[in-house]
Image 1 (cartoon, rainbow, N blue to C red):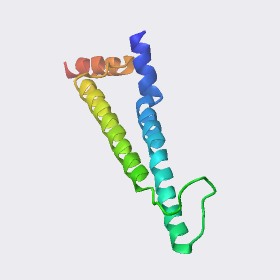
Image 2: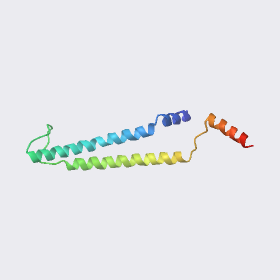
Image 3: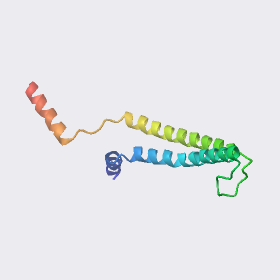
Image 4: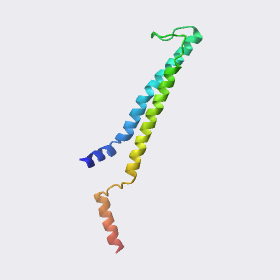
Length: 113
């Protein structure tokens, strides 16, 4: 069963897809914080309330942006460490030879004799 699970992970590239999904989801708060900062700056420059949420247009929400960036970096680092550990664990294992490769190896050895 573990062999089938490993083949599933390799065949469908589950690990790269999961890494991409986690990093994409971690990017959302960063983008929202950047948009809030930009909207706040536009509102201050034009004297308009360009966002329809209840917020204080005199304050620029840089704290939310900094928090979102720190959170993103932490998530990205943890994902990096997990991927690095998976690569290190898989680096020492050689893939099993397929039946075709085994047959070709036997043919090669017979021809060498």
